[in-house]
Amino acid sequence: MEPTYPPIPSTPSPDATPARAPLRSPDGRVELTDEQLTIEGNAFSLLELERVSVQAVRWLLWIMLGALTLGGFALAFLQNWIRTPTAMLGMTIGALLLAWGNRGATRLRLSRLGREAAYYSLSGELSQWQKLAAEANVRIHQRHQRAAAEALVLAEAARARAEAAGNAESADYPSA
Image (cartoon, rainbow, N blue to C red; front, side, top):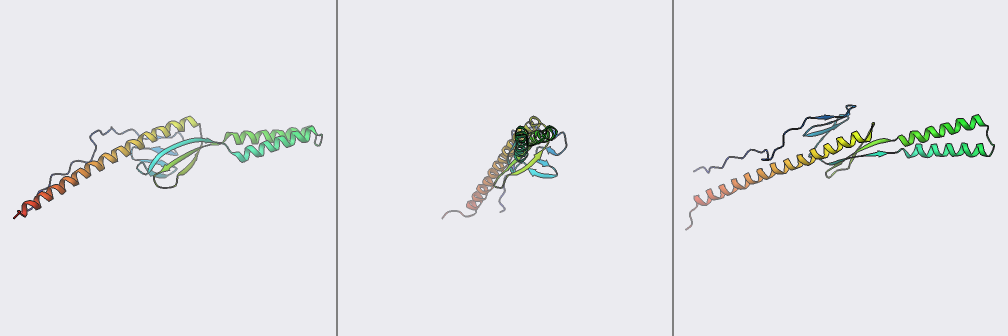
């Protein structure tokens, strides 16, 4: 006699949230869907990500070079080692280097589960990237919750099949 198994329940979780519209950054370098995050053509599954963080990064080399240039030309001018036009030009270059270094960039950090973090440099205002990172973190959390619910449903189905197979075997071998 062939044992019968209960049907496998469907895998979607009972509290499935509706699909959200894909998000795209203004410059088109980052795209976020319910299943993956694509940055500059590199696709990352939301299941492989732990979180996304964004922070402003200043270019320390340019700040130091600008400060040194500005300070050096100001000191040389005050010591009467250089003339006024040369000092003005040097201090202007130093101030521009300082401004360039202070401008900096926005760094996107992808924390990947069990792997080294991935970093990307992005241009634009920090606030727009923070909104995108917050939405990515929400979608990562939802995707992990959906995967956990699907795994639970599959584990319960496997347990039910094992119990049914155990009951069928015990029915085939009556106790003496």
